Each structure stands twice: as structure tokens, then as C-alpha cells.
Amino acid sequence: MNSVKVNHSEAYQKALAHVIQHAAFNEDTIEFVDYVTNQKGNVVFCTRMLGNYAEANAMVSWFRDSDLVAFKQWCFIAAKLNRMVFQFDVIEWFPAYKHLYALLSDNEEIISWYSQHKVSYDRQGSIKDRDNPRKPDFHGYQLILALNNEWELLRERCELILSTELKKDRKYLIDHRFYLALANGDKTEMESVLTELTSPKISKIRNHEFAFTFTEHFISTFAVIYAKLAWRNGYQLDIDTPWIPKEWLPIQSLDEYPEPWDFMKDFDLWTPFDEEYVDWSPKSN
Image (cartoon, rainbow, N blue to C red; front, side, top):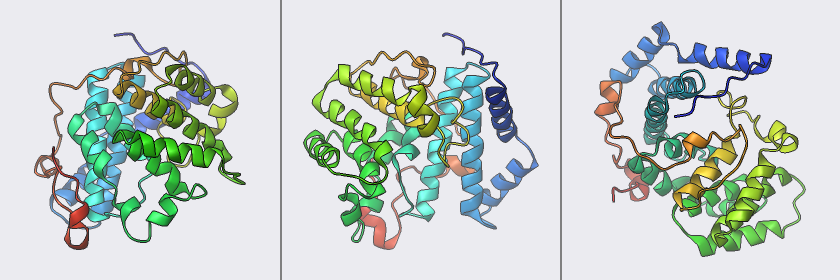
């Protein structure tokens, strides 16, 4: 496996030090595990914080240690902890970037669960926004469609938004160009779009969003998601950019995905949602 190229810029080194700090196992981590294990205090908050801890460790495993196996294992841990949060807050906002760690883990079960989690888009009151190209829900639902190979509908929605005169969020139109290329099986256009998305002009804007604290100085989050999605559909894109680590792209599940705490081991990924949302529960294939 190739080693990560070391970036000596001050911003990069500060970012790496920041992530390493959040990846440290300390008294706070012990307390979060205790609270979740014993169901006391704010369990949802503690689960989220452990998810942040796992995300930080995923980044450190690769960008400091060049360890692809540990990276994928931590990605799975982060994705499962986030899935556990959805058990408490079923209709929490579910944008495309929340699929990052599930996709990078190459764990087919967690990817299947995420691809089926549609309640925040399908429930009454959400469908109108989901299908409105001027709403952020429209963007998030595109990835769900792609993960479920709903190419005809995805193509129709891409054509709709690309022909709509938008006054804001025009920076996301490039994403729909990618989805259209994917739906059409146009590998050359997919590579062209991702090359543009990771260009200096666009990456300096798109890499830095509020949710990208641990990734903004290392990867282009959306470009990585889209490249991974292309590889999952048999398109081995060749894009020369440090913003998309090439070693992450091949679809190779690990032999094992160890879970570090008993409360995670005891939680069945396929646990149905409670009461009114039970019919939206993802199901094991």
C-alpha cells in the first residue's frame, strides 16, 4: 500500500494536530462510553460524541498512520454510531455527506442500512421538499436514489434541476451533473465533473462546510462520496487529485469489523424503529 504523501503546509499540520487531539482516548471518552452503556444522562449526545471520536480516528488512521484496515474499521464504527443516533431521532436531517463513513467502510450491511433509511424524505410533509429542486432535501435524496440504482428517476431529477433557474445553491449544480453522468454510465463525464469539483477554484469553497471539521483540509467530502459511488457501480474513475485518496476507492470489504464497546456489540443494526416509524425501518436483505 502506498504511503500518504506528507503535506508540510502549516494549515495542514494544524488540522492534523486538531484531529489527533479529538482522536485521543481520554477521560471524556470513558465517560461517554459509561453514559451510553448504562443509559444515563444525555445518551444521544454521548453517542454523537463517540461518533466524532471514531471519525477523528478514521482520519488519523490514514493521514498519520497510512493504515487502510484501521481506517475502514473506524469508518464502520463511526457509521454504526451515527446509525444508533437515528434510533433515537428517526427523522433527523439525513444529507448526502452523512453517507461518507458508511461508504468508505466497504461494509455492505451498513451501506445497505443507510441506502434504505428514507424516512426523513418519504414521510408525509417531507415529500414536497424532497421533490423541489430549490430545497436542500432534493440534493440529499439524489444519493439515496443512486445507492438504490433508481437510474431513470435520478436522470429525470437531474434534468429537472439542471434546467431550473436557481438563485441560490448554484454551487451544487455540479453534483447533479455527476449524478446525470452516473445515471447515463458516462465515465468520461464523471471524471471531468470530479476533476472540476476538486479544482482549486471550487474545492476552496466546497471542502469547507460546517459539517467537515475533520475532513476539510484532507479530502473533498462530496467528491470522495461520488467517486466511491462510481466504483460501487463498476466505474473505476481515474482522477489525479490529492483530495480523493486513490487507495480508498477499490471496493474491498474487511474480514472483520471489530466493535470496541459492548453497547455497540449489543445493538443490532437492523433493530426496527419504534411506534409510528416502524414501517420505515430498513430491513436486512
